[in-house]
Image 1 (cartoon, rainbow, N blue to C red):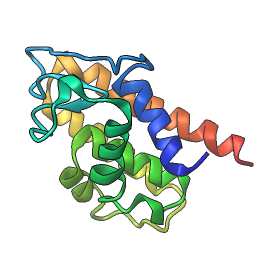
Image 2 (image 1 turned 180 degrees about the vertical axis):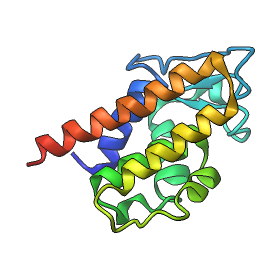
Image 3 (image 1 turned 135 degrees about the vertical axis):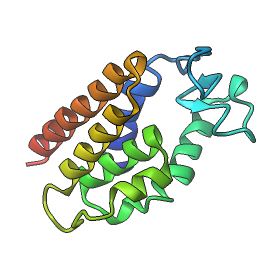
Image 4 (image 1 turned 90 degrees about the horizontal axis):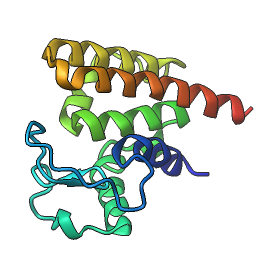
Length: 151
């Protein structure tokens, strides 16, 4: 399994809950608006999200998140953590999170997770906070399991 596939395996767990229909949502309290395959209409106005198919969604993830964050140049833990952070908090914010992190450090991905947690807590949004924090905790578990499997 490639690092992109590992990253998408994790993102898929959260973004479309493993559902074959892409887990379409249109929560009026979610500023992303209509969302399918984890791709929101607000963040992707050029895409017909209601009719989005999985291959096109995967192409968006690869081009707009994986490639932009240069994830191929990082080992598995950091590549997966970067990808999920870019998807969930945005590419620009993820790049800011990386400031002050030594990317050559073995546990740099954990520092990225810590910055995400601090960011989520700063938003003071009880409606989504539990899910955001749960996602980062699940990411830590996922990466730990994948590292163990790779030994």
